[in-house]
Length: 399
Image (tube, rainbow, N blue to C red; front, side, top):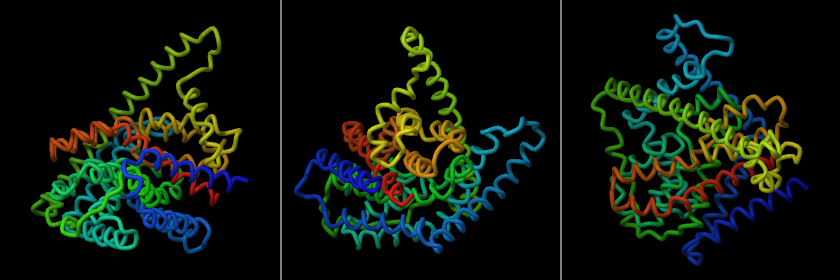
C-alpha cells in the first residue's frame, strides 16, 4: 500500500509541475523519464545493495575525517572555552563550514572540481537531452551554494532566456552546498543527507524542465570553466575560501537567531489569539496539518505525519538549519522511514529566503535578468518544494 501511495505522490508531483508549465507541448518527456529511472536506480543501489551501502559508509567516513581535521582548527582557536554538555552549536557545527569552504576553494583553483562537474554535467546532458549549461549547473549546485553556483556560469548568462534562467535558478534552490554538508551530517543521519544530493539534483532538473521547457541551439550550448576561480595562487584560494566560509557561518548563525526568535514571537501571538481554544496551537502545528495529506502520500506513518509535516513546513518558512535542529531531538521517536523521508526533504535550499538570495545574485550578474527572477520567484519556490517532495518520496519507496 505504501508503494502505491508513493507512486501516486510522484504522479501528483509531476502533474502539478505539468499544470504550471508554460510550454506543455515542448516538455522533454524522454529526458524526464530517464532522470526518474536514474533516481530510482541510485536509491535502490544505495539502500538495497551491499556495494551501495559500502559507498555511503565510505563517503560518510571521509566527511567524518574532514570534520576531525576541521575540529582541530576550531579547538586551537576556541580550546580555552568551557562549554556545557552538548557543546555550542556555533562552535561544534557552524565553524566547520570554514574548513569545508576552504577545501572547495582550493579544489576549484586547481581546476579539479570544475573539470569533474563539467564532464559529469556533459554526461547527464548527453543521456537526458538537457542543455549543457543547465546540466553543468545542476551538478555544480551539489557542491556550491546558490550564489556561487550561479556566479560559476556568469559568462554564459547572455545565452539564458527566461525559461533557461528558471532552470538554473531552480537547480541552485533545489540543492545544497557541499561546504555545509559537513554541518548537516552532524545533525541528521549522513546516509540520507548524502543520497539526497544526487536525488535533489535530478528532481530540480526534472521539475524545472517540466515547468519551463527549453530548446537550445548547439552554438548557444557551451560551458566555459576557464574563469571559475579568480584566485592567483593556492594560498589566495585558501584565504578566500576561509573568509567565504566564515561569512557563511556567520550568516547561518544570524539567520538561525532571527528565524527561531521570530518563530517564538509568532507562536506567542498565535497562542494569545487562540488561548480560549487550545494552548498547544503553534505555527508548526498548523503547518503540520496543512502538509499532512502530502506527507501520508510520501510514505510517512499517520501517527507521525503531523510532527513530520510541522518540521517540513518550518523548513519552507524559515530554512533547513532551523528545521534540522528541531527535527534532531525527534530522531529517537520517529520510524526509520519517516526519518529518511523528512531528512531528504530538508536537504535543500527550498525556502522563502532563497528567492531573495537568488534574485540578488542574478542582479549582480545581469540586472535585467534579475527582474525575471523576481517575477517568477513564487513559481520558483513552489517548483523547488515539489522537487524536495519528489526526492523524499522516492527515498520512501525503498525504506
